[in-house]
Length: 612
Image: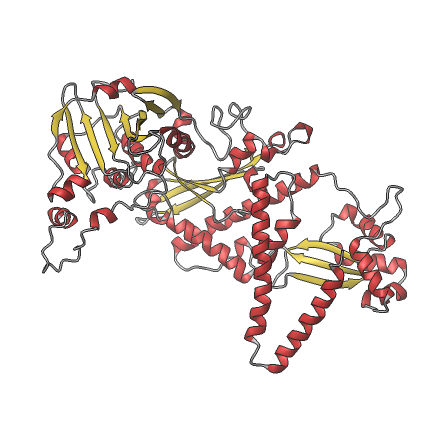
């Protein structure tokens, strides 16, 4: 079968051959294996090295002058991955480069799926050479060269031959031993998006450091990134743990947080435990952990915006829920985060599970995602948007596995919401809020909202709240206002807040809360005040109002531009939603006229209120 596949890849298909796999582009298409970037492809090779009991790995990035470029600049020419593992036999090496033939099937291993070497390599380059040895003086080498295979109609991987380790590799790396090891060489890097060794090293350090942080932190694994230019080592970088929970010391976090924890465990119960059965009925533990930024990280002295500092920018690159399979990160799932909210950087969450639960979590063969977990997080977000339910009110999905996954995701969402509330309180506590309702001498000053309403009243337009101001006593108005704001004001502040609203003659009061249904806002006329409650569960709040209302102290120019761009899109979608509503009612002349009249009246009032 393998001969047939390789033959078809090479174009040796007769014109009257009606095999299912009959395209000349099959080999090229197999190169698109779903690796997000070169670092995730390199991680496949690191998995293999670790499974081969290698604890030292060097990634050597070799730059050479590209003579095809006008300015003759250095470009990434080869990537060499060297380990001190146990190596491979000749036969295992021969199979290791075959597509679809795994050489490691141990469930507990990082490279359990055993298909990473050819897929990961070919996703970046057109030729891969492998050297391996298990005892001194017996080095075997073979290769996979796509151009050679296609040009010469080759059907098989070349039989491994005895070889020698290239001298220059020993000059670049000091972990090559006579005992055993493996070297993988990528050349003709046509699909590597990072074109210089410095770029590959800088970008890979963060990803690889996060992927293997548990092993790096324990000293079970050492990874070096080595840059070579003009045949000389120009940079050696020891990969440090990149911990999105910011609990590890000696990490890649910027000073001073590289030596101490930047986050604390969240609350009295920072861990959540779940017992899940695998497909054979065996029970396994899944552990979720939650962390929260220290006050000193969030609120540095001198009123400096923490998000603009190096550690704040570092935290922004680690957004999401980290999924760990046996200590190795698969992905940072971002379905549960608010990408528009710069305060999301100040909490951390991870879920760790054993490889025995691969099927439960839906692990794909390139170990970049947990598809079942991802699907459930998307389901929860969709349910919230469509039905306005809370995280632990998800519908019963049916099977035990789905119910267990639903339980995990609902717990994650509940805890993340709790941390968001804590961060928001922390943010509100640091803000010095200027009371615009009072002049410098302390006398009441009408807000722009109250001024607009007073102008309407002066023109002879009377509303319900105007009538209440005439008919109700001051005490009655205070009590009526209290009843409408009590769910949104701390009990200790309720009496004073209601008194201030009435005495300052506020005509409009805004408050925010989670409302059921699809109303963007609710309106109550009470105590002479128009009380408007904005529904924070509504998508128009999440994707429009919050972008311009919940402005954090910590915001870069880039983040401000993103907010304004999203606000513009949200505003146009808001107007489009009204237009669509009228469109769908157009067949009913009476209803269409009512909507048109309502739109006219509102827009007329809007024109007057926005004359500022």
